[in-house]
Length: 265
View 1 (cartoon, one colour):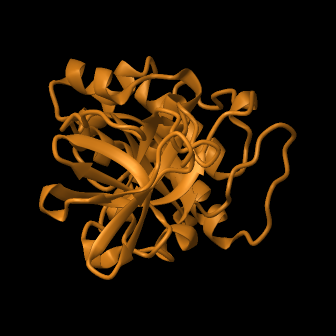
View 2 (cartoon, helix red, strand yellow; view 1 turned 180 degrees about the horizontal axis):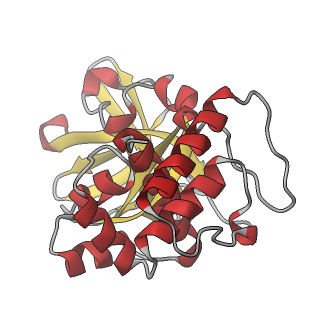
């Protein structure tokens, strides 16, 4: 049976994203070792860029995995199996056996209308319903500070595509960690925010929503509102950080904050 390259790309993506998320491996460290750009590596991992088998093998090697075993892990997850219960079924898989197994895994995932419930782990049967959003190394200050111009990607988070597409093009969305406390209790130091980078014009502002923006040479995350021609900047903690009117001549939008995530202490 002939290999279906798109199936292999999907299975490779599922396995690598699982390994990265559970082992805490940084994508930018892998990219540096492979001498490729972090964005390029992220596209390989998310299946947006196919690349060659040799490239996928190099990525697997940096993850500490044999390439064939990594694909078997991806098949296992795609079938609904718990990664914690994965034991490689093919000790010496031939290319034909691997191809047939990949075909079986992708066919069963597409035809099955039910979930396989396994204790301790939940995996979506149809991974096409989920989109991976990159979390960049750059941090967003909620008070004021610099915003490094970098495309280094630290990790990824999965969101249901229906959620993302409500707000626009998922390719124009990114995750950042915020620093500072002026937006408590809406945002806490260390929270992760999902930002819609396509909402980068003053005309996109919806009164009272939170946005990331540049003011002079600093970056902030605040609530914005338009009152006539005046652009008002408001902090959640308004007693310590009173509202003020920003000079739009020294102002540029980064994007709208769509979602906030934080750890529970």
